Image (cartoon, rainbow, N blue to C red; front, side, top):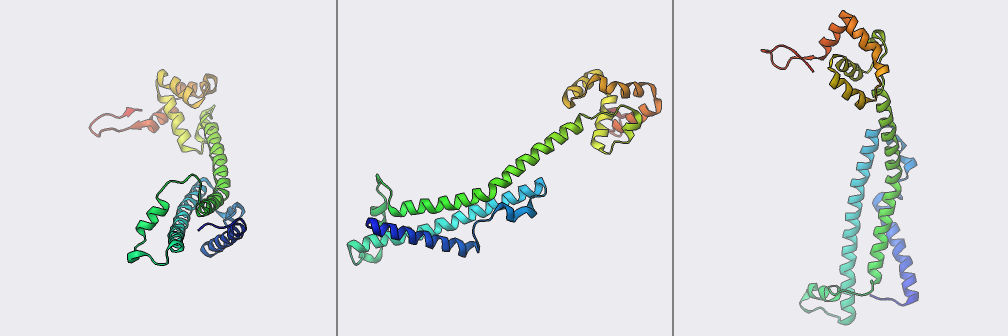
Length: 233
């Protein structure tokens, strides 16, 4: 149903109030703020979990809004029809609805503008809640990547420091480097950002210290088949 300019302004304010009441009824409060969710942002897994929760919640919110709008759409179609004729023939409105809404229009109706405004508010509320989490997640992932690269670039200069490495993955990587041939070593130097001068001390120890060399080879030995001799990887 179309309204005069004054009626449209009054109706628009009423629609906004009704939608605000709907949001409060559905959620109990306004859209969540980032400050209210600090308990969820201690780690990357927590951030990802909370973002997924918000995405799921947002999809459910939109479904409810669309269902509400669909009901209003049908009510409006019936109002339009009843304004033309007090009684609907055969009690069926499907043909009337198609006639009223099935044809393309050059301009949006007030109802369509109202629906667009409502869905925009829901989407903006979701963005307001999830954007800070996405920003924090991206920062933490960058920090984690920098930490990983710094860790991978480490190389113990001596046998004593090799055995003090707490990161078992790094320790195994260094052992694999020492036990590999020159081709594999060159590849690992490029992959992990090691310099030749950085690795020379431990390489010399590996070639001279028999017990250290035996230990390294035990660490990298993998028995592929119990019927075959162990091979180095």
